[in-house]
Length: 329
Image 1 (cartoon, rainbow, N blue to C red):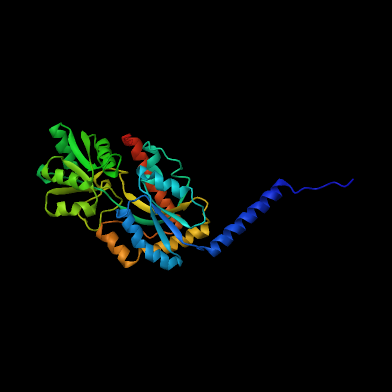
Image 2 (image 1 turned 90 degrees about the vertical axis):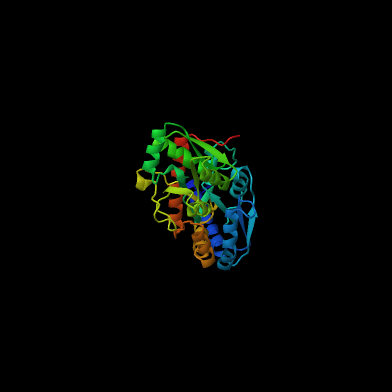
């Protein structure tokens, strides 16, 4: 009786792996084969939406396919993140995510149906921004050391204003309080503009916002910028030192917006996307917008971008644990 020989499992697994790699290679060679969907959690006209549409024509030119921007605001970014995570990993869906959708959202108590870390691969940077801590000019302090000494001498609780709850402004005020041992109470506003207006009039003593928002108040002399929560000084505010320069380590609380794709998208496609995003981001009309906003852009290849995003996100995750902030339900 003849014995029937069946292929061994290692052989079957090897064939399956080769078939998968071949299919990935074919997909990468033919990509993009149809319009590309770009999902963002920003409402139409929001700052992230503006950058998406600034990039749109240049990405279309580089990739040879239409880029269709889809706005899915709501649920602190969970709606957009969920839609992107469930998309096919073929390079025809991009998600413009931030530190919120790509990490913080789960830690802040927002119910999500996707894994902010495991479900996405970062392929390119859009813009990064460094928040600035400012004080009412009448306080007469010029740096962090003077502010801390001033608050301790007064031995009272100071108010720090910012936009919303569990936002960058909230984290800045809370982290500064924890690191300096100061008595600071966070006051949430609907946006940063009324927060800065109240800080300028003395209704609150401290406020956190970004360059494009704060510059009118700095120019009038009503608010004094004390420090930047970033790795470097801002090019448009070269005389304002970083928090690290003033002795507060690991307070690089920069916001960021990056392009991501669903996990499993072929690496060759990710590299092509990274190259196209680099060219779009360096286009003069895009770069001029970034510089005018006081934003930061760094040219990085695929691996550098992914390592950078993971490093910044890890720092944010640590700040969440350190401050204990949760999103109000």
